[in-house]
Length: 539
Image (cartoon, rainbow, N blue to C red; front, side, top):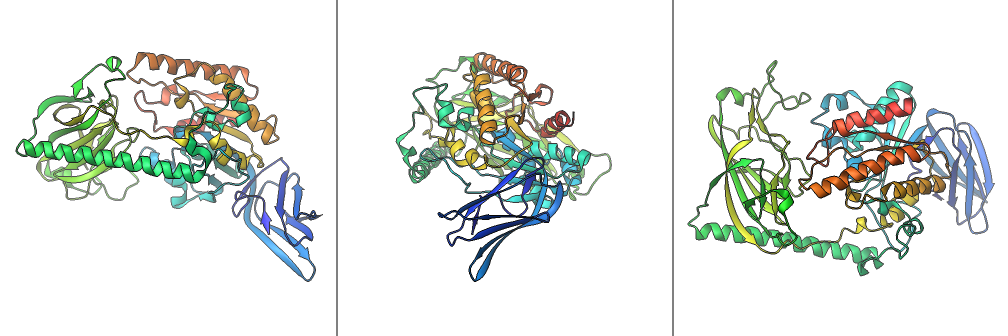
């Protein structure tokens, strides 16, 4: 017996104060009974087997079980949905800063994360999906998990900290539904009809969008081309080093650093033609004392993570464009394939030695720029000391190609695809509010962002049949991209968000400028932002 969608499953949280509709399909026909909170609802399946029952004003609390029975001649078929709570449900949407999980900020808020554990705060995460041929009625992924143990590390961090604050204050169950997708512009979340309000010609889609199989096949080919290009660059760099007798030409540089095809530059001077790819090596020696190789807790000493039972060294290298492989004393200790990933590498116990230790970083740049972002942590933390790694390093410019890396189509960034596969399937659910954290990917064209956001909120309110649904959104933090034109557009988008808060009814903005990170698109402090949303809700 089919019942509703994937989100109607064990552990679900139902919105208090709102009617909830249960529906399904029963091929054998018969009478449908639903038993929940000691109430029984009944209906008869339609001739096509479909049925629907509406449960009004569920009682706050739980857990309860929901029993759905289909009575047909000679037997009763039962479907059980276990461990159901009734409280407040929040729809979390936007791009990577909304999706950034608790595991990503654990090092910054380890004690707060460890201290909060609750069976009454739950999370339903829908993995990235998109489709351009149909609008889904159900999601491919998602299950309800509790804010306990390792499961809470998968929660969106903003939602987790908001929910922790609300639950402590109200003792009302909290459900979080996450539909965030890294890098997505707001247009990805608009349905096609609403997208046409801004672009009457409609979405201009690649041919591969005709099917999910075609998109998957093209993505695999593009990923393979990128991997092959990187391997070719690395092989060419090794060959170049061999031709130099196994030696590299080293010169002094300063970290953090900006390089354009191997030459130090002012970011504003970059042109579209200066977009080659290549390899650059960096190295630095540091002196380690025997005392620093102690791995027990030392009262009052610098520690890398107060939640850890054992302290080991951690190497932090801020943010790097694009990809890095990092070695300490010849052993690989970390590798990151995205310029947006914070480089924080735990070193194996025993790798460091008393005396001189060598740090080497091999950077692959794919579009002309190699950059160690300023205003980021560059340090090595041991049991008793923090070594500042900013300043003098050595640099060796390796192999360079004039052409950039192969490019790929990010299908999820195209209009309406994320709406079709991720947002539409949960529109039959009810929520206490929409939580929104997005805008980075619209900073290149900020002019109509307020209007698009207004249409999105109107769309969600209409489809969820909640015309007064509250919307809480986080304003983009201040950010310096090294490009004055881009920085001005970023400021314009922030202004559009301020206008949205003033003009869209029942919409509230959280300011994040004081908790951002001027050179990091993914600031760590999601705790302050989540708690500011909670404060708005509580007020």
